[in-house]
Image 1 (tube, helix red, strand yellow):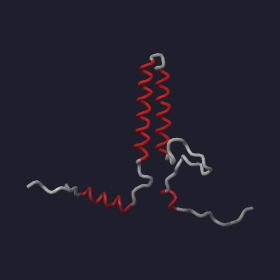
Image 2: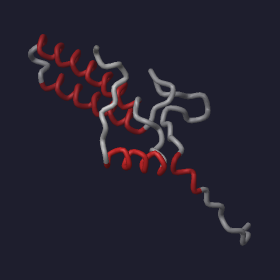
Image 3: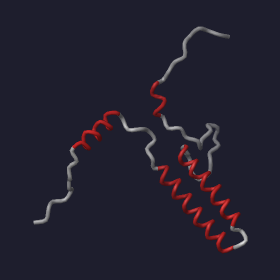
Length: 115
């Protein structure tokens, strides 16, 4: 069945965050409810690099254990920091405001000067 109606184009779809952790059928990835691309990339890279380094140093048990602990800590920190990234880009108005403020930077203090 083919009809000649044109497809709708939604221009605001590019600013929607894409979550990788929820497939819609109730299955979610572990540890976080909503995974975005930067979070998932950091988790996968951290897992692969940590596993590779532990495997390469498996003959020395203490060294492999230290690498495992350090790799887990760095991976968790990277995922947590990348999850703090904003989901959408700044608006044109916000970018123009930043540009305008950067033309003439001013030092502003939230405290009164000492007397």
